[in-house]
Image (cartoon, rainbow, N blue to C red; front, side, top):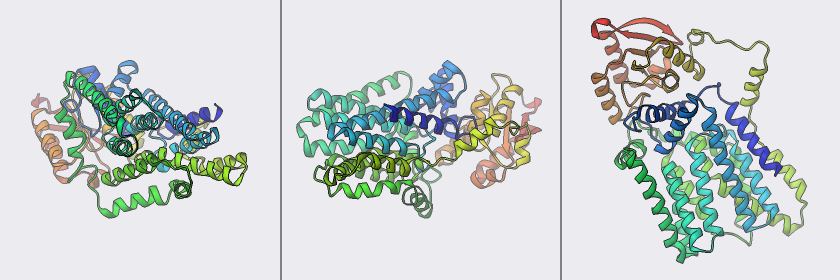
Length: 476
């Protein structure tokens, strides 16, 4: 199917030409934790903390095991799962309506996946897996008529949940739909869901990852002071307006409204969309990739609405598809500039101290810092990179002395960071000299690291805008 392959190509462009040819910030977090797990046997939350599921760490650990530090394998895998979800959106629309509806749904969902406002470049994030599994979960509940289909649906829902707890809202919507429309199949769905969860949790437990840690780090510690959701109402509203009301998402509104006026409505999409929107609001950050949860239901609703109008008014199909392409085609400029840089005859060369000259942090500068650390330390040396240094930590291939290798400012994180640094003092400390370090990192953390470096370390160098401190020999 040419349109399907074209959308896969768009995902590849968005995933590989919108970064500075380096691991992104979140990817570096997962790369570091996954590497500690697969290389050193340090399981997630014991070898590094982030607010994600162990399954995403496993993907990056497996990637590191096969290919070392890289970003291309996780992104290709994420694109593969997004494309699988795209195929099931097509199948669902085809099951409910016509081939025309299926192609319209495929077009709308495929293009909207690559929008800037929906985090089109974040192809390797947990949403790529979670949303794909939720789409398949919905498909088997809508198209199924035997107990086996609903058991499979529940099992896929369990996989979605274990990739991202946000999947709870999609799963809940299916439960509501089944209770209202297919009550006799609810037990089969729940059986599949619980079986999937028990198997995955059992495997993780055997690997040494406790359920308590998953609940603590992937759920509980994400709310409250200093957490990723700790923002003002004005910040949240600004994100909501920019990423939802003042973005490409508005292209989906007419079809959503029109869906209420067509004869052949299916309640699952209304329930699904409502539950996902509630989940989006509960989390409250309104980051672009979270809006991917809304896209499948909205895309199918728009497709069914358009197909109804085509059939009812006898509208020409091809001109409508052309208009859809013009309106929904992603307007991404980052890949264009990136490709121009690659093809340029005189590309900008970034030396070791280019970052300091620019006086601003960049992901590429952090990569250079990490590679410098790797060349100037022994494999068993521990290195602390203060602030948001996950990218440098990943490329350095050195372990941090603390599980909070990237600054996290909850009460638990602060206490653990201080205890870890008192018990394990690294060979090297790298402290950012950028203004952003003063703005974004709490004074107590900055003061603690600064006092530690001043007492037991000597300033040896400045690299990529970081002050490099080495432990005094008398401290060994």
